[in-house]
Image (tube, rainbow, N blue to C red; front, side, top):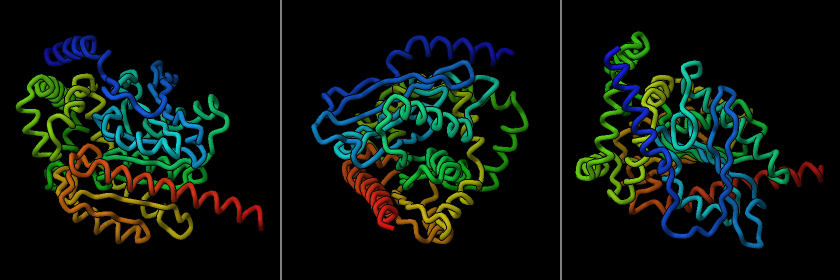
Length: 353
């Protein structure tokens, strides 16, 4: 009860203090327009979602729709360079997970899980099809980190609506394996978290305290950023800023749920001859949060048609990595263009018989 009381009070205080600054716009004026929408999540809360489009005469929707899928503890900041480039040829959609950014917190009734995120993706997509009837019905999914599990699950359930899945440093194997490197230790921690709600609350409390303290201490946060993601303190500052807002209970429940091998089965299914969905993985080989060599080997084995781009000195945060963010954005846009082109060719071939 003691830990629960402190946890609840600290969460309420910091969310009140920092909620309005959870998703600050960049200082430079973007070359695109942004629509902000709020959608009912079906559980008494709201999903914060965004629609980006070009202001030029050449409509950005001509090549289709790109749906961005964040990693856990993110609110879209890492996709800014990609969005700026992508809206020249596509319109872009993204949303905040429950307990993240400007979306409502996850409720006790519906914790944050991969399935909950997939359900919210479907809700957001249907919403934008309603508000923008001219949007093409095929989407390209671009995912990051744990968002890969969400994107692949969505694609497996909506095969007819997805024309390709791009993955940046995706957590394709059980989530804790990359973090702790030991499968035995990871499985033991997961069993404890699933077995004891008290232990889960205890861990969530200290994660909450740690995130807040790191967000307020630039020196230690920059040290951690330089070790784990090889990104400068400036580029990674939005992560720590947003971390103060993240609902720790959502963070834990998402990680626990994502400690599963289901994603590998889905990847194999999507890469099979029967589905033949375009798949593209970018892997930073210096990633400290994903077992990179094992990931590359697994993808080659279970989805041999998946295109893999290995970045020799890339870190986990390739999308904001000082050296690689622009190149990462460029190759992802090229992949999205190819996916849209393949769909257009299929339509023409269908018309011509």
